[in-house]
Length: 309
Image (cartoon, rainbow, N blue to C red; front, side, top):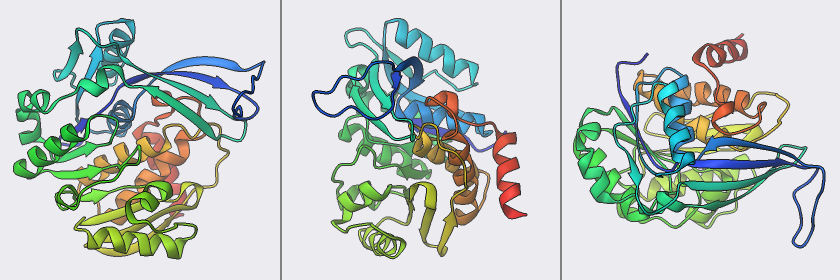
């Protein structure tokens, strides 16, 4: 396990998943789907992804005082995640996501945020010691933006590197981006942040340049099965994807970000960290569910080594 602690601040949800032939159109009812429930939420997924990849992970989040919250915390503990700063909300329920997964691996998701929307800067200040000891802090946008901004400031003041996964996509200020060590949008998120269409690798490069110009130190634009574009202080490069049969892409980006944090905390270069994370994400899409799809360190190392051969 890495000696450099990783702090994840973000959401925790319970995913209600129905596997169907295709994503239902408005007004359409599809019979014969398969149902499953699984632990999810972008923050929780990233924390679990990092822990299974060998990270020493602390998680800051809010869950309800309900069975979903109980089960979520039990899952974190089973993955050896420090849950000291997971707050039990007395009035709001735990977050829930309803997910359709099509046969081709595509998904459609609706989220009821619940307690995630109540995570406050005050919650983070109570966990200041976790920021002070963190090597890397991982954030996403499923909690209030003011809380994300507070987390970025606390991380910057503590000297920790911030990975911000700008999902779900929303506009972000230059003041926030200037404090971010690494921004990790997918193609859709990169388009929203830059106004540039990202329909090919060259366009992804232009979008990365636009984000760097706004003050972000490094950018990795994830390109789905094609891989990822890396740009920033150490130059730029392209990490190709792995050829696998996709079953469910639900948490691929979250696994990517969690395992990326582990690689950076261990001192890998940005390009090598992206290779490690790309292997982890490739494994995750071959499995159904969010946290259930996160691979172990041994599995990631095996696929990454195979790609080098």
